[in-house]
Image 1 (tube, rainbow, N blue to C red):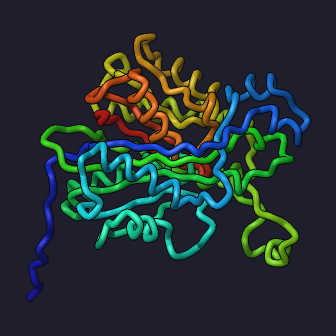
Image 2 (image 1 turned 90 degrees about the vertical axis):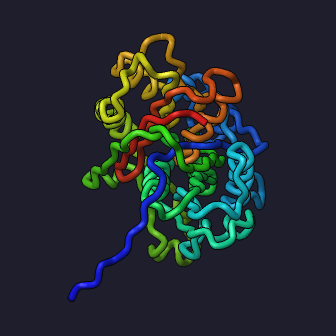
Image 3 (image 1 turned 180 degrees about the horizontal axis):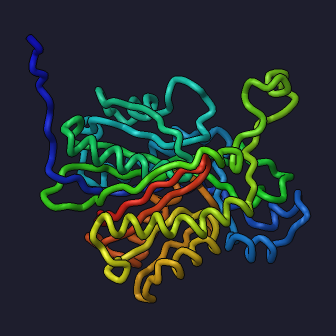
Length: 334
């Protein structure tokens, strides 16, 4: 006789209850970047929109930034750390293969007993974490989920690479996801094109003899033009699919918060989606650079704090990056 297995059920819906961000104090201008590459402030601005970025200070770790951002998100949500049932950290720049940085973060926050794990989905990682967190809350595996996107990309940026030295930056953004009586996180539209995995990658691998002998440092390498074309032509389609899945028209959005990869990509997506002028668009990249998994929650926090959008507004989120991977969903802002 086959035993009947008991299952769990959770909240009818999930929602983002609070957001928090952390931006390192050190501001790195384009003038500092171009000292090492054949470029100029004007060229960087025209190519990416970036005027400055934040880099973590000496000893300021991925865990440190995550704890700071998570503390703000917990306070905004009105949730104590020991109420968190699952902690998801999206990062590609934690320098240890194991243990996960998530376990350190839960310990430092006092999230005793929380399940804790890292995910690697690059610049799409935060939107992945929101999707997973929403499903955990709705499935009954956790009442509250802490989702953090965090990067210290300055450790993996080659300062002499003209194609990428000006792009990457550091920071952390966090949200708390919990139960809701009404729909507040739309269906995720996500996927991957592994055939293009070499377009953005770490080179060389940790196993390369030169790395083992400490002769070469691994850096992130990117074929910028290929990434640009993919993002411009494919990600607007993904964003539209997320709108359609949620049953929301572009004109009904209160905010568009895309991954802060490049201001030209953002502007191209706005045109492709035919967003009306009244919809505010995140352009946090101008003074934050590309913070990968942290970019969407950092931009969300800034838009809320600046009054560009208000709590309860409807926002379209989308992240995309190395893999090549992507994820998008419509959410109600905390």
